[in-house]
Image (cartoon, rainbow, N blue to C red; front, side):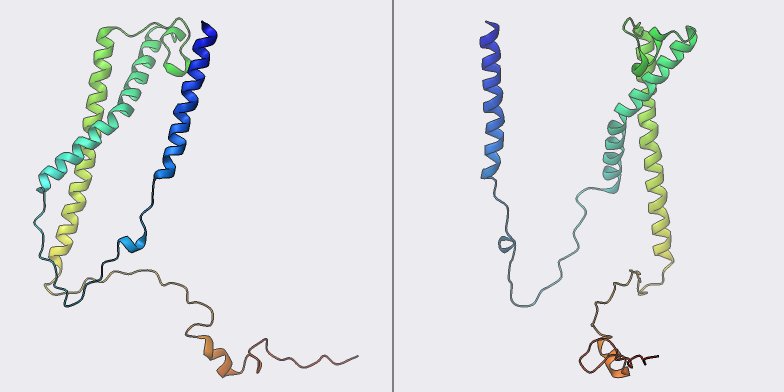
Length: 196
């Protein structure tokens, strides 16, 4: 019976992998011609769109994402901290040690310790989301103050680094004009060395 179950498990695994391998060949990529749309006539600027969601809803969504996203990390730190605290209270016994060094006969946390760990993890997640909200709010207020300081109609100049000019581009004709290169555009001509 054991032989047949192993045989069918291997067969199922083979067909399962083959299905996924061969199913990717039916995926077609989108070509650039499908995205090209040619229009003629004058192009009018699009009217300014009203934001779909108010700013407080976007801030609340970001808070929600940061809070739930950081929860696994804060829970791991809280449980490791609780294990270290328990180990220190029991003379650094390895049965109370945190996960990487926990022995085989480890003693689990009590219900109250689980509740404390969960409370610290939730509190840490809320603090991380609150810190992110404060940082984003300060940056947004600073940008609004800087924009309000500008006089109306002033141009906003952004600086970008210069790109390197290609060889023989705009400055390619200057070397020939100054006589640094030979008649064929190659290396400059030098006088032959005199024999001693």
